[in-house]
Amino acid sequence: MTDDFDVPVLVHIPRHRFKTLNREATKQGTEVSTLLRALVIKVIPEAPTSTPARVTREERDTIIRRRNSEGATDGEIARELGQARGAIGARRARMGIPAARAVGGQPMEDS
Image (cartoon, rainbow, N blue to C red):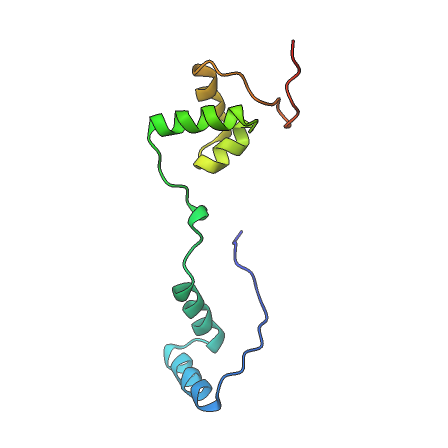
């Protein structure tokens, strides 16, 4: 499965520029839409949240403590860090920190 979207767009391009663009597409054995897509990809950078930055073990543990105290689930923390939910849950447990919420996101009941 791909994250791409098919987006129909009406673009007004001066005739002489379109002819040049069409010639270039033909020369490359492709279509004008493919060239426009390549231009969009080149001009618009990826969103910075698409790939979480690598963090040190200490930074990860600090984030786990902070986000857990804010009520975040292991899954939410894992998505922020780009790691598996099970890895975050296991690390949290090794750190001796109880889950902020039960599986399914329900608040933990006080015993």
